[in-house]
Image (cartoon, rainbow, N blue to C red; front, side, top):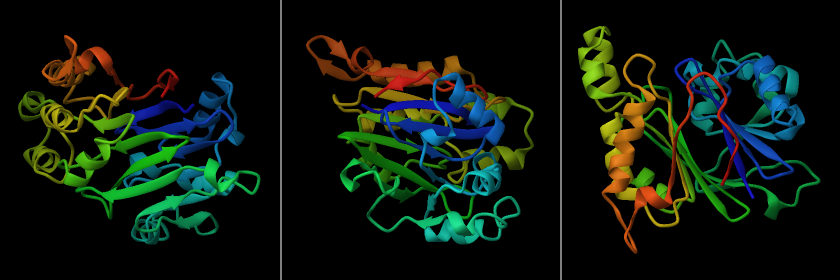
Length: 277
């Protein structure tokens, strides 16, 4: 059975961990190698507990430490060809990324976790492009040991692909970045406010909640809200927006979707607990 935890989820850094009891993968490299080792060790893991890295896009809060990871760990880094081409030139990755480069093909890609791991025991990854002002940004549907895990962070709007893939997932990590009132009434310059909310930046609590109404299904066991803004959101506002959406969905037998789906907000700068999916 898969376990999931977040090491950091926000503009200061993003990093997520999936583990099947023997092997693991990490999504994004937004924490230092020292912090990564500390967080893993505190929970009974080590740097040998993951065999591959996935990257969502090339903004610094997602790849700041990827070059260091490649230099010291030499683990395969999976990304699209477009994103890898950008990483080959990026100041933080260009010196160390080449030996670790692995390309995600169109459709699904089975990650190589090492010679001792049978292909059927490796995760199958499907990526889809989402609108965001990076070179390219992708979300992931990861199928592993019968569990379907979906992650989409840093998206300017919700796409049909995102709804389709989330609609089949057992666990979903979905962006709920800002509260519109806090953003518009806050101290950010007008240009930055527009960058965030006009379709190529981030998702609001309301947009996240509306998406949940579209993709929720009875098999969705865990729903995690990620990448909450420090200045334009609070965990309570994000949680209540999506909780309200879940309460509005009839799950049958007198229950609502909120009654049968575990809803959590992921911490911005500290590790979450370990969740069994």
